[in-house]
Length: 265
Image (cartoon, rainbow, N blue to C red; front, side, top):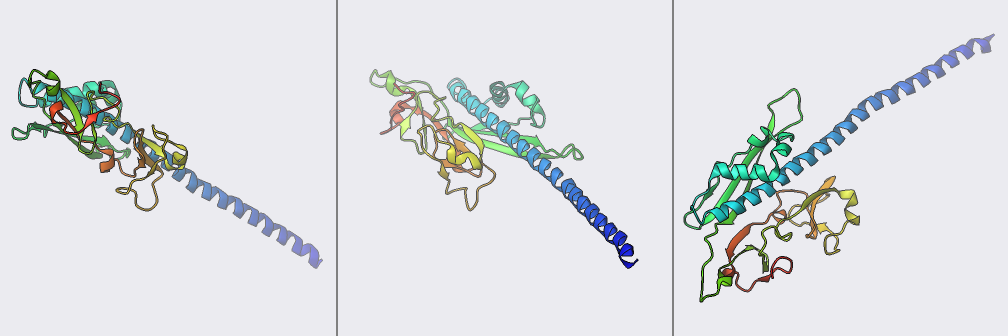
């Protein structure tokens, strides 16, 4: 009799233990899955932010080149046209469908100007990007991109040699001059790639990517920034290693620099 009384009690305890384990798994799944989905969506959103920022910077470079060429006729920057040239370069449709606040009308170049002393154009573009928080519809992150370009003053003859007055492009640290502003050595192609895949990637010259001493301290993030011609990977898009100031100068002012093997004859 005593054994028959204990059996149902033990069976109830086992069923209660099984139900408790299933409930625990359900609770854990309910917590982990939303966190995983949020992490994936956050990564996608960050990639879109970097994509639109890179597009704006490229459009800014194209607009600055046009502005530098136009200063030979009028020594000032037409801010409205400068904004329009950026939109034309990026594409109004691309900007209107992006997370850029205001779409193709969301850029402000009001701080762009040409210095009468140095003859350089200081280009500044300000814009905002919408953040993915539906309950706060007006919440945005503000960004500002800057670049400096030497205004073009036209060609000049020197001892009958027009080649010396030809406009070419140089950088602060570059050892060569470029005849084509769109040369791949001048226009950095920045990519955002997963850090886990970096070891198998190679740059244009077949070399590996090593950490940037300026912006990589300790462990790298889930993704890093690289260029096709560089040999470093970066944690920050604003790292000086990913920025390049381009100057338009006369060929006679390039000093000991040789011509670029890609774009100079």
